[in-house]
Amino acid sequence: MAVDVRDMLPHRFPFLMVDAFVSQDGDAFECLKNVSHGEPYFQGHFPDESVMPGVLIVEALAQAAAIGLQVREGDQMAAGAVGYLAGVDKARFRRKVVPGDQLRLTGTIVRFRRGLCTVDAVALVGDEVAASATLSFVYAR
Image 1 (cartoon, helix red, strand yellow):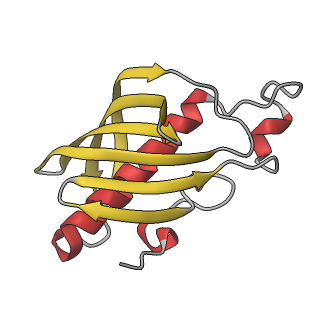
Image 2 (spheres, rainbow, N blue to C red; image 1 turned 90 degrees about the horizontal axis):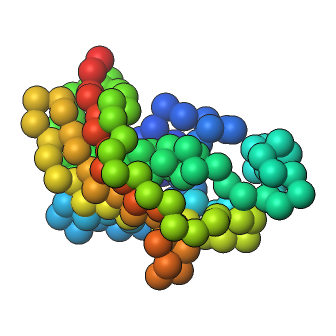
């Protein structure tokens, strides 16, 4: 399934944190983020040792979750609905993410009812967990 992430998210450079949609299987999804030296945040975040900020890894997971939900729901999503991050629970950071890494942004949609969504999300580099969190969203127009 060909999905253009720019059609699914309102974000644009420099805050678009998902490069590609990979797959959707029921409630599970996967997207990719290629981390490069050219990312604007590396200029000021540990300039002598480039490390992707954890809060931006969580943002990438949130954007991937929004794509996963929209792909799963298809035409059932309310036209013009925008997802707003409402909560981040159980966030854990296990590995540094550095330029040259490819983040596999995966997750499972646990619940989506009445505009409220919960997703268990994991960011991986290869098969190694870089970060994980339970994310909550509210969808509104």
